[in-house]
Length: 157
Figure 1 (tube, rainbow, N blue to C red):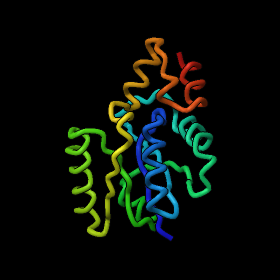
Figure 2: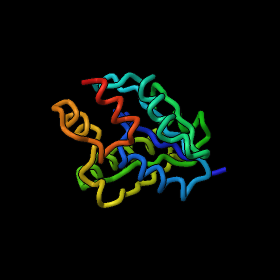
Figure 3: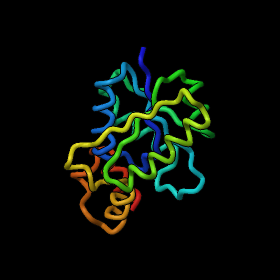
Figure 4: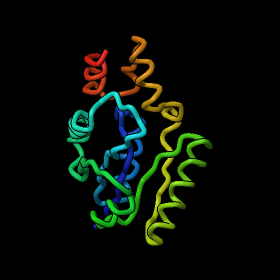
């Protein structure tokens, strides 16, 4: 079975994330969406809330598992016996950052492969940060997130 890990903060999951997930499912038999505990970020949603939102938005995909992890991504990938990590690229700034991460991960584990996928053009501007800011200011984010996430964002206001 070809298993991939799709790591991120997913705070919150957006339609862009789901687009990358659907693209990854064309390449892999199974994808684990893995929420990374990042103490450097100040998340809007707790890890538990994000796990629930991810589970609800991906329940239609039987080939998807939702999980969270602490520590190094390379250790998590080894533990799960995945063959690759999936990362989305929207613009050149994403590429520079993601390339650094991929090369560092390869230094930590020479067998670690990173697959970069580009979202549909309509999602190239979309990020969780932008969605959180628009929602915080009372803007309409209904075009950017699944309905269950929209409801959760409205409760956070």
